[in-house]
Length: 414
Image 1 (cartoon, rainbow, N blue to C red):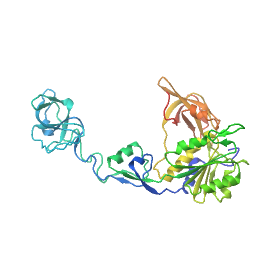
Image 2 (image 1 turned 135 degrees about the vertical axis):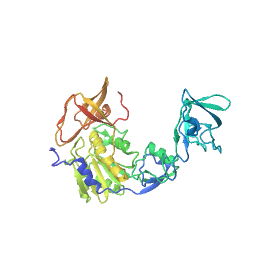
Image 3 (image 1 turned 90 degrees about the vertical axis):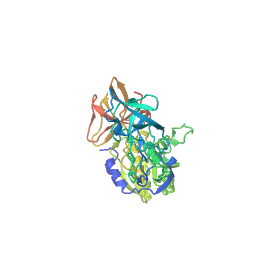
Image 4 (image 1 turned 60 degrees about the horizontal axis):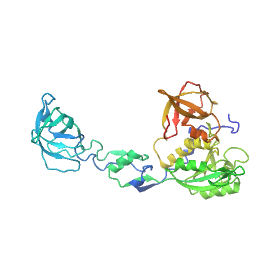
């Protein structure tokens, strides 16, 4: 049990309760150029076949497959070449018996042909003839009409996050406009008498409001951020900040979420008639996270320590934004297996997130804990490459065990 909280709630249970209060946002239409990173608000059906015509899948010769039967390197057959085609070319050529057309990948397959012989099985002999040294069956090396996508096919489902490959498909379907979910408007309120804005004088124990920039970086492509500034440790001041934010879709506060006299966020939420859904999660770091509803507006109170705020953002904040956007599935992060170089201890009943550095030794990947504790040690995030997550029902891992590492860095120096 926690020394501070009377009880702790599992993240999954807290989110289940919290999500009953989260509404999916309304749709809007954007240009395709602005659709990357957005979430589809409607199912997408293909308006036509892709490809829209039979096309060559290789450079070579378009042929009637029956004319190649029996061809081999020791017994090539000779075909007359009656033309050539490149992508975008149109032709009224009809290929007859023992005839062929030289063709490039992606070009329209001429009438009368039903297969392509790749260039490596052909040899031009001059005089408008080519030797074919391999037989091909009907349809060989041809992309048939609708072999990729058929007209009317459901190709992308509502709630799909639009990444590079979804952009590729939407562009292929000639979609200039895309129906997407409106981005949530998220108010960020950082609290604490000690924090100041970037570039301020840091004397007298002041610290830069650095968590603001982490949150902006984590959320920038998913939401519209409404930064409300720093709220000093004063109930009326914080109350006004929150009241000013209630028209937004989500309020995020940092610090002031524990249970001490100076932790004002829970108190202010209740003073405003809000309902606290969960306060105190069974994760470390990130335990003092708060989830509440004020009127119809959800509020997530993140811990003030940067590493705690980071873990709580991954576990609570990003999934909540995903829920608002109606994203199908859950957020995922790359995972690798590595050998633990030192023992990791943990307390049963609490899910621990241990920062580790990944290194390579021969063909083995090693994971070395950077800091076991220290939720305020920012450098542990930059020195580490990922988290080893110790489940609630384990008492840690021993050195030499193979563990799964959730990689939070985009590039690894291995």
